[in-house]
Structures are given as C-alpha cells and as structure tokens.
Length: 309
Image (tube, rainbow, N blue to C red):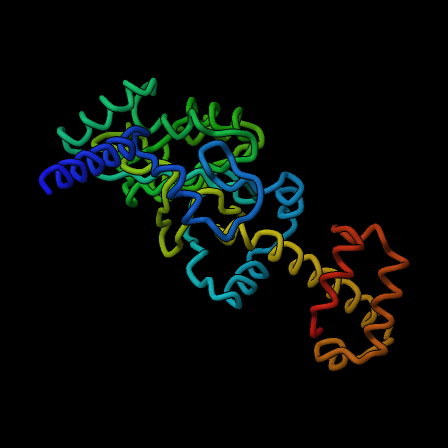
C-alpha cells in the first residue's frame, strides 16, 4: 500500500514537472483539447493553423457580418472595441498567438525568467511571444489594461513583429513610439492608449493560452479580424463557415442591389424570403459573373443546398 502511494506521488510529481517545462505555455495536449473542434492542420505546438487562403478571403469579411454569424452560433463574447490605432484605415487579419501578462512580483518574475533562460528564451518576457511569431500571426496580448508603464512594444519590437508576421498586434495594454510605429509600412496596432513610459512591473504569465481582451475571449489560433470598428476573434473551427457565409451574403446583396437598380424587383421582394423566380435569376447572375465569386463554385453550390434563403 505504501509503495502504491509513493508510486502515485512520484507519478504526480513527474506530471507536474512535465507541465512546468515549457515556460508559461500550456501543454500541447491541453491546447489541442481546448481547440478540439478544429480538425485541420496545426503548428508544432498544437495551435490551429488556418490556411493562408482563408486568411486572404477573410480580409473582405465585415465585422458586423462576422459578429451576426458567430452570435447565431452561440458565440457571444468574441468582439471588443474602443482601441486606439496606428492607422485608423488599415485593417488586418491573421491567426492569434496569445500572451497574458500580470503585475509582477519579485519571486514570481525570478522563477519565470530562470525557467525561460534554461529553455533558451532571451530578453524580457514581453519578447518571448514575439520570438514565436510566424507569417500570418497576430500577437494578441492581455496586459490587464495597464497604460503608464504598460507599453508592451515600441518601434523596435514593432519592426520585429511586422518582419515576422506581416500583420499587427492587438493589446489590452498600451504601446510607445507612435511616430516610429507609423514608419513601419503595412503595420498596425490596436491598443488601449499610447504612453512614453517603458514597460515596468509587468511579467508574462501565460503564453499560447486562452486570454481575455476586454469583453472577448481569445484562444490560440483564432482568426483575428481587426478593422476600424474594433476586433473580432473567430474560433478556428468556425473560420471557414463565417467566411463562406459572409461571402454569400455579399454576393446576395450585390445581386439584390443590381436588381433594384434595374427595377426588376421591389425592395420588399429583395429584402424578404426570395421566391423561386428570384433564386433562379440569382443562379443565372452567378453564371454570368464568375469573377465575383470569391470561393470555388463547387463550394458555393454545396453551401447553397443548406440555405433557406
């Protein structure tokens, strides 16, 4: 009996140590479990890897359409606004790589940095997430809303981030060096505010973990769409459905507006449940305008089979 207890304690200790090996990241198995609805490709650490082709198509998805589709699916906590931006008119999309920060305390910060050093991590903890970024990623960080001395990046780190990702950042925190960040062509940052101070008394407590950005929850690998209205985080497993549905709505609206301009149908007919005649005209319009269809025609036809119009 004593032997079994000792064996159980030893196994528990080994499990604990294994979980503690990867700095502040959660185990790969846990990340896969939390995002288990995603059935596609993953990064080596387990983060869902939404295809580049979907990222490109997501650039044309509106915040309002995405919010409505997610809300109908029961995902009601995926949007947050009230950000300040480097450029108000420069949206971006990408895959979320998440980081969580908390107020520091000497013992916690020492242990985190010591463990990170043993793993080969370099610099302050706010650089660790940046080292993990790849093309198409978006660095999403919860800095607990800290402004003064809560500046997660300046123009040096901004240049490094953009060189790795080609996108931008979303912070529930502040940043510094606004003028310098403006010089990075193509880069944008959605932050709570700008401040000239350096980052201080802040430590990384979660890397590639679920985080909160204002009223939104974000999981690693989520599709990030950042536009002037704010930022929406689409679960990876719903990315294709949201994009496809938004694209269909756009096609439907484009056709409807053309029909109204031509006087072929009334507003009441277009804005209500379509008749079989309108559906028939829509299909003919699609045949005549293949260049307007962003997805493959096969995917569109398959999608339309399940529509109630």
